[in-house]
Amino acid sequence: MLFPAILLSAATGQSQPAEMAGYLLVDQERVPETYDAGFSMYVAAWPLLREYPGSRFQTGLLSTWMFAQYDGPAPDEVYSDIEGGLGWWRDTRFATETPKFIMGGVALNFVAWANGPGAGKGRDWSDPQGHYAVAQLSNRVLWPPDGLNLAQGTCGELFGYGYLPLPLTPPKSTTAGKDVPTGNHCWTLFLNTRNLKGPVAFFTPFFWSQPTLDRPDLAGMFLDSRPSQPNRALQMETQWIPAVQATDATGETYARVAPTSFPRGAEGDSVVVHRITSYNKRALWDAVEAWFAGGAPASGAVDPAASVTHTFTGKGGATWRIYTPDTPREERVPIAWSSFANPIAPAPDTLSRGRTSGPACWRPCRGTIISSAAATKGPRGRRCGPRTCRPRRACPRRPSGGQMRGVPSPTLPPTTRTPAGRSPAPWRGRFEQSWATRVW
Image (cartoon, rainbow, N blue to C red):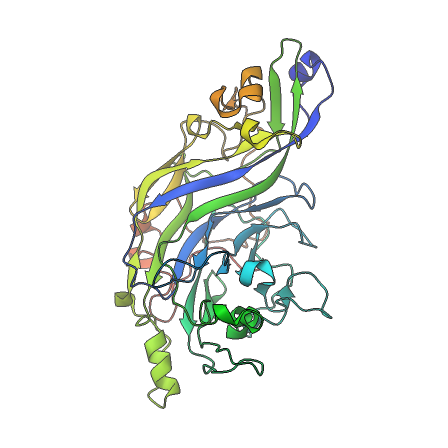
């Protein structure tokens, strides 16, 4: 990870370690608050960086934060949600260029988290902090503590996932011998991939209510008993992408980041998320609840009439900035994202990152210039912008043997991407549709 020679020869000093971090932001229309029983969506999976840069690397791909919904304002200093998705994390032990998937449940103010069956905060089973928080339903998948693996070489295929509450456990009026209740909302992960689809695992309600043993004033305030907030943020959170920075004899500061890619389709666009759907309890909860009460067995079908599809406005932005570790927050220089990429909505339920020209996978250009004024004045100075783009390679290809064989291109019109011309509603019927990547 070096500067081009022309930049290094002009530098007056050695290069400094730097980083790029921030958020890519997506704007959506709001939906009624009554769709308070979970969500589903398709997100693109691809290797953001050409090579895994080490354990400091942490970034998600497009994902969301599902918080509990309250009748009034949310209580102060209470953070608890489901915020997993595709990405790379600092505690990953066996990292790959291809992203992994985690569930990402967060108990009160991060006292514990749960990323999957047996995957909690830290690796110490003598002090479990979320290690027992997820119960697996499917016998068709082996879930590593590092996260669920995708087929290596995945580049741009869509990964379908979501959470619906199911009454799989009875509610309790007391918890662990204390006079605090635990609800029966078992938030269940559903996947829709080419070789795995349907319910996989659920968060046990005790994971959410356990902190109330010490904070009984918060009883009934978490996802074990509360509905979900349907109007969720949709963002790509990046905490660290490696970079270097140097200044030349004229005072201009140059920076270069690790080669960073977005998948590009035939039309030059990068489809990153598709068909975000929110549900109410008629979707599946009511049928399961009636079944457990002695009624007819639930069919497992999700009622599409009990859902609403979010629409994209085609607006968005980025807060990505490049800076050295000692740069004050107010002086970190923003990337001029809109100068080389812009969000577009080719269909109401699909978001792409559009661009005008460049390589097969979008990546920052070989040199990115920051003016000296920007380095001292922060956001008021000139923003980072791309220099001459010179593509050095195409998108990472699928592995030999055709693991991804037959996966439709995510850049085609949504009505023509699936068999029989159907749009890929993720939980229609008995989960018969599967058009995304493979779980590996």
